[in-house]
Length: 111
Image 1 (cartoon, rainbow, N blue to C red):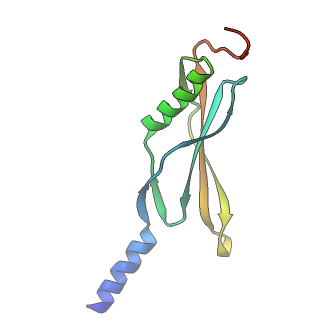
Image 2 (image 1 turned 135 degrees about the vertical axis):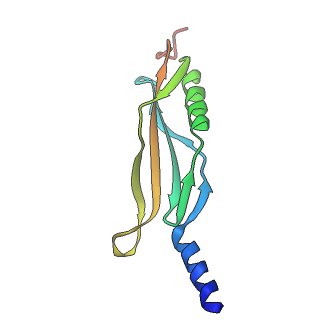
Image 3 (image 1 turned 180 degrees about the vertical axis):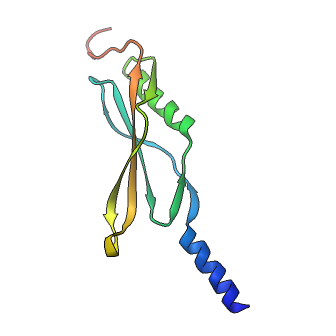
């Protein structure tokens, strides 16, 4: 019985845990009308994100620049930001870019 419990515990640890992750604004350009959102996760996590939350955050950022909306460029980039032993990675950074849409006020001095 102890072996069965140990095996089940090990399998759970290796399979990772579903973890809710929130997007954060990490960059972009008013002049290019782009917004960059990111989140981080660990090697044993299985990140779950809310795409509607990402779009709402991007739209909000774009609206502060005078644009009326945003749409995703498509896809995400993922890069290791904390290498681990034996060629693995302990922490990943996932980034998604959005294009602001609608008429934008690119020059802060104009109305």
